[in-house]
Image (cartoon, rainbow, N blue to C red; front, side, top):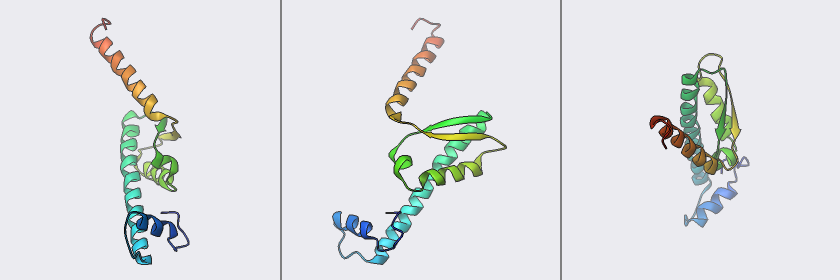
Length: 128
């Protein structure tokens, strides 16, 4: 919906009609595009705030951040919005790279389980 630069809003009209909205006008489509843009920007800014907070707390000169999800992968402007806001929020000369993670959810769950197991083992003195 955000990529419709010709302002005919054909995709938007089709989607609205598919979900049962009747008599869709160009103004309706422009409003939907505006709201989608606001929501996308807000999502990117909230995500950037979380990432920038972690980068600022870590204070490492260079960090690679794994990013997963269809919004980051397929949204036409989300990666750019995210990068721009992180750049505004990080302190000093910290550098980072956002790297798209393939199958991040499955690997992320395995990583969390491994870290939790290690922490439990350390807490129990290796008897786990």
